Length: 184
Image (cartoon, rainbow, N blue to C red):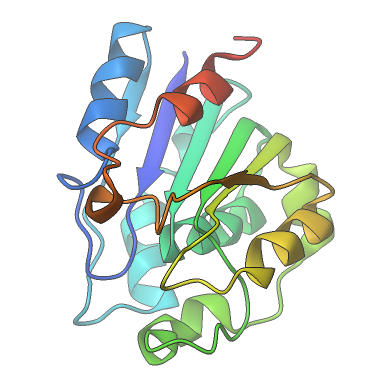
């Protein structure tokens, strides 16, 4: 069964930004969509987020689309490290790894500042897409280039996209939906 898993960022929730819109669009295409609530900002760390995901891991398969925003994109990489399956697509919006030199480094540290198993990550997703606003106030511009290099893809840079969130008009994200729909 086609399914999708959407992960919000720090200080975020499943009802913000483009997540409700994407959920509705994917459900209309026959996807089962999960958008769990992750603890943030209190208790936001690798272990507490992984506890949320554990009950979903058995649902990931070759028909799964994994979507993450901001630190949720970074955490999507951690999910790929844990899987026994290969997913169809992983889409990372405003994602990053390592120190970001921004005000949110402290809250994101246990998720972003660790050694990732890039070989396992790449083996557990058929394809990757990295999307990033050219004027993102939270994620440094070199971060999508770094992610693209590590994953072997060319980042998609969105002019005046900001953090690809509601603050910059992203209550819908047709470009991301087209990536999901490509070759389904």
